[in-house]
Image 1 (cartoon, one colour):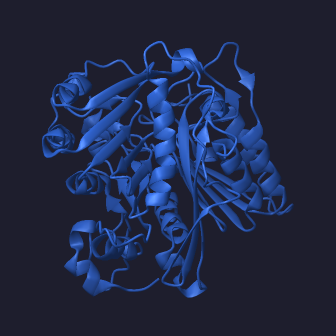
Image 2: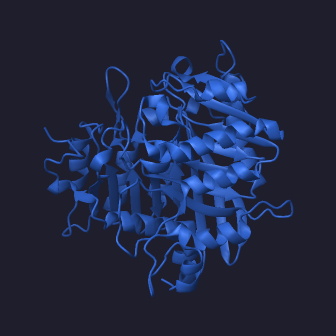
Length: 455
């Protein structure tokens, strides 16, 4: 890994604990962000920037590496919007008032909310989508935005597919894209650990994602039913978007779920995940909040082994597998037997490597804030691809629930793969978390105040 002390000192706002001689493994993300990612009508470079949020009061070791702060990425996207903004979020709670909490950590959410409100007066057409059903709050965000000239629709996926609209993405000027784990929630910026990707100056990908937004928008019409025709996708696993820059060849496509609302030209989210697992040759690293091979939210529950089988098959091909699962007070206890079953296969004698850890965000003095202090990431990185999604790895998210995934495959000389590719950067983030003090081995899980999985 390259030492980049001068860069880190100059742009220390993107990193923490920078000192003389410290490595900053994701320095290239900041460079791309500052140098080549800002909008230009003459560029179509599809510059990719890893973004994340770290909950307040979480302190990593001094040499930890980070993506661009999610708060900064969102604010910058809003500041460059000139014509259109489309936003999809499962729910909206951008102020502490929405959940009856008086917390100073909601300040970034309030600032973003103010930026959103100001866009219509600047002649930017803003359209936002949210889910029915959704979480119960006292949020007035969408009502206020509508009063400011924002177009708002609620999509009743409960009626249409018996699921929810769980996608989280932005499209700015049909040029720039955000996809990731973060809802439009102030806690996503300061109290929940999130991860996503911003792709600048990439109209081909932005327009492909806009086809998904258009489908949702039509489904949000009053008393609507499933459409007879769905917008065709020209970018998929068989025909990815090809981008070449600085000795790196990138292939990108966007996957979707559930099958009921995806045209046959759209790669399904499940197929993207399973094929990524199946094509891995050396390693698979997964970070996801929930993992259970069942249909959880239907009655009766039923077994759903598609991803689980792919993982087991890969392990028997001697692919090294590491899984980082979140644990918090709202974790589903039913996932424990399935995780233990996977972990039981680990055997050096038989050359099977499946390691599983729980990631626990310390509650500290923030436990009064509901549905916070959790690792909400949903991504996978292998020696072949990086996958960043919006779905937990439970069966429902791929059968009835609307979600999207971004798949990136990159080829570069070995000397720059770790430093410059999204896959290399994402693995650096995974390793940071895997070896951090916030993880507990599945086999060592005991009674933990912030992870009450055990009775």
